[in-house]
Length: 154
Image (cartoon, rainbow, N blue to C red; front, side):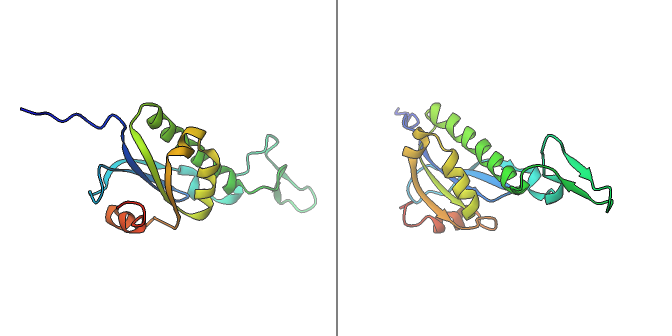
């Protein structure tokens, strides 16, 4: 009787991400169906922009007009939220890499999210990045992702 042990090098993973959801899939082999592994949700992705400002001094009412305005940085709160989400995704990927669970990574993500993910990857993960497609994967299932990654997943 022969038993097969899992590949000690790990497998290829596919990350499909937009501002609100990141889905991780495993590609156990060429042409194999992508196996869903995990879904990460960014709860702040749907929060109105005005509520995303997190300056220590918060919001302040203008005595003359009675309107509130945010104090501090003019940088979009949405960009902070996207960067935090990308950082969380990359921590998860790094943990899998350190555990030897993946040998390569393919990313399909909205362009802004893809840029944030690339910026937060560790050196070890950058070496495993086998392909990246700047495309909105929100409506794609596993087979649609495989088609989007056709040049790499053969």
